[in-house]
Every structure is written in C-alpha cells, then in structure tokens.
Length: 26
Image (cartoon, rainbow, N blue to C red; front, side):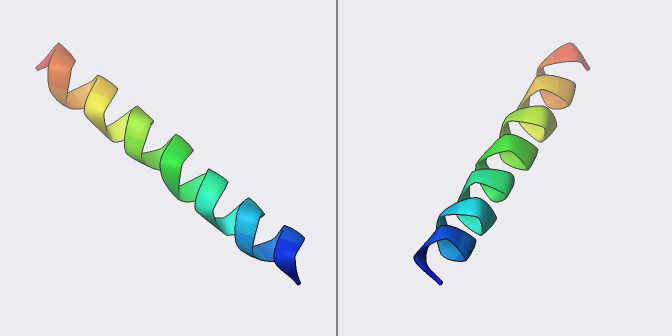
C-alpha cells in the first residue's frame, strides 16, 4: 500500500513539473 501512495505522489509531482514547464514556455 505504501508503494501505491509513493507512486501516486510521484505522478502528481511529475505532472506538476510538466505544467510548470509549459507555463514557463508561454
């Protein structure tokens, strides 16, 4: 169960970085 939580958090962080990257390019 701990691995699932870490995986979910990791995915959110990766998605957040992608969004920030796109905003910086605007």
